[in-house]
Length: 385
Image (cartoon, rainbow, N blue to C red):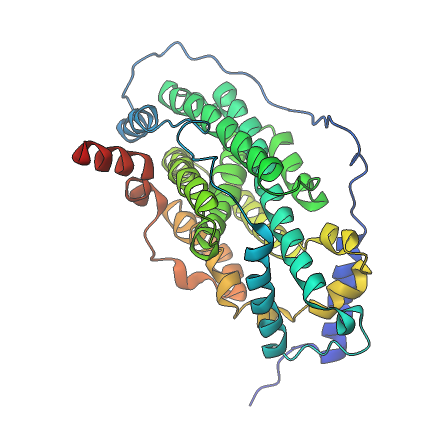
């Protein structure tokens, strides 16, 4: 058998430690500030071609978006009582079972002496943190889509993007209201999420805004929302997530439909830039959003906690939860030609993450109508009226 260049366990441990040091070296420097500024290096583009429907798929999406608007104040039942502690207690039991199944030894760590109260509090803080990052990401999408309105050269795309600006404002509104009204407030934005959003907004090329936000961030968010919807026992949060997912599916479809036409005219070198950007964004979203802020708030040494619960990449690559986060991204990258351009550069990288199994799943450009919860509910209400 031929020898391979697989690093030793010690080398692998050093690599993970070095990466952990890099993750922890990035922190929010303006966490107490209410305002964060990012240079938006893009030209605002007018078009004098007002022909509506020149791009039929985008026009169809625009009409669907106008029909499927909803009101976060009247279409969600905010009277529903939320007992976060009860839900968190059940989740904490599941967390401890997963830790035991993973063979993680808690002896000699602060967790060894934790009782039910601390584990339940951890579950509550984790939910607050996750929903807070969803909320911050939605504001990132709000800014990015406003930028797309300015920078995309097609009137059909400007029309649709304008409806998404309204969608994203509504998403920020309902996540903020849920966190403040039903839970106990929100966390600041994770430093690595902020850095990714900054990079997307800062790029001068309009298609990079699409790729970074519409395909990568929104694609991962759509998968994450779906998993949260399936696991939460809270009927209000289920209702909120179902409606947000209805919008998000259109948003990802918008990115795919717009970029497919544009990418067909790019050179190999230009496509490689987009492939590298997509892979870097995927790695950052998977490996760097590690709820460091939760450990800090719980009074646990952040570095020790991350080291304790860190797993090798080969284990992470086999984790169904980690893989499912890419279930919306991979088929969309394939439809855009990113997976196989340049001798399959991105395919090979996604292979290392164990996620190319999703390449033939339905892409969001075809799926979004199936997730239109707003229309489904209105039709159901009309039938019973």
